[in-house]
Image (cartoon, rainbow, N blue to C red; front, side, top):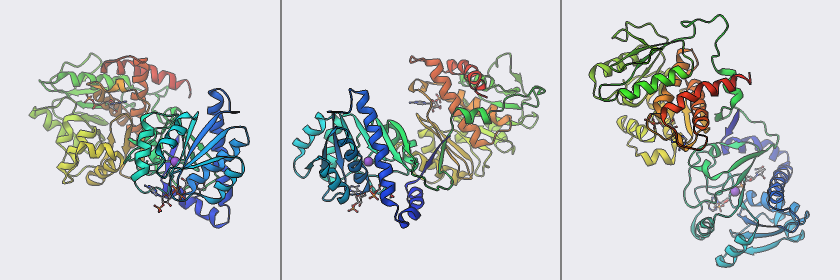
Length: 480
Ligand SMILES: NC(=O)C1=CN([C@@H]2O[C@H](COP(=O)(O)OP(=O)(O)OC[C@H]3O[C@@H](n4cnc5c(N)ncnc54)[C@H](OP(=O)(O)O)[C@@H]3O)[C@@H](O)[C@H]2O)[C@@H](O)CC1
Ligand SMILES: Nc1ncnc2c1ncn2[C@@H]1O[C@H](COP(=O)(O)OP(=O)(O)O)[C@@H](O)[C@H]1O
Ligand SMILES: [K+]
């Protein structure tokens, strides 16, 4: 499992060590880790000796880390130029950099020269701002970084890409996209959240021995899925594995029901009872026409439910049944005021904006895209439900504050019906008794992996995702 911590949590954890006078030791560890990562990259592109790096140095400790790292690299034969982008820089680090033979330039009014130097280097180290940043890059510096970014230089970010909000992943103003981000003490939540995560490249973490509390955010890996997936036991039967009720499809949209049902079947449900006008596949049992008359452990409601009163009534009945429910697509506009934590809402950014606006928080889709975690948390606050916000990175927020961020997918998953398949997988997990936020996060992970497996780099249709899910689970089960 990958865990993410806020900048504040990292600062709090560092505080006792700083008070004990161990600040320089922490910075030395950070610099050593960064220097190794840079040396590794330089070796990949031809060797460290005689290669050149340019450091963009801001006013704080982030610049200090980069300068100390460069000092170590100067001693290994790397040529290094520091471009000071602020009116001050970490003095001790600057002195040791200078003494080791580093060249120093000031950005102040010399953009052309600094740009040319940066573009001639093998690597650029972004040591402008770290967790002390407030907002994006400003003024002259923003203009310089914007111009540099247009040339897409090879960048390693020190702690985080400068201008990215360490907590939310929000991006305001220009940012240098990194090949790699070498982060210190703990992975900051903003490095695991859109939109900032797209700028981080590969993530590596340098351990500083900090005593951290509970993580703010989790990203499940394959071992977590193996540990928590409801693998069937030898003596299980279809009822003990969980029965899922599905209210999906309408006369106008029968296809969504098929994809949701295929998603649920692909994840290994014990049994499905289907309510709606579509012709279900042979593995699916037709349920009684009312929700109350069906014995199930969980409901999946909403895919393809449009302008169909009978289906809408069933969705509402399921949402009020007290059972775990995954509410997708059409069901998101039918929600009763009071929802419990065992209701999983699965909006994409546009649907979340509509949902929040309907609850009195006027929100545009672009607001959600700029700060997805914040808006997903707000929806949890307003509804009491568990929220899964779909996207290239899918965010899950549970009512107890647990946050998951899963990013296994491929852009080929952005195809009509893909979300119906995901809802089906969540439904199966809920029916098996998996706790809602964990069920949503595991489903997002498996859905993403299935997309990658089905795609092999090429296009896929939504039904291909369901076809690939059993193979993904088969491969994962081998890790158990
Ligand atoms: N603490 C530790 O033990 C360890 C910390 N470590 C390292 O320290 C980093 C944090 O260092 P830090 O606190 O000095 O903050 P950092 O981000 O370098 O600079 C903040 C300065 O920038 C300025 N500024 C702010 N926003 C701005 C903006 N938008 N645009 C322009 N300027 C802006 C602001 O100045 P002001 O505007 O207030 O004058 C402020 O003074 C951390 O990320 C990690 O790399 C490691 O060495 C391990 C041990
Ligand atoms: N760029 C992307 N990269 C990875 N996954 C994506 C991307 N865009 C969308 N997805 C995933 O594809 C699915 C799309 O769901 P949704 O928008 O509800 O589609 P539909 O309503 O047509 O079924 C979601 O699971 C989402 O996370
Ligand atoms: K940085």
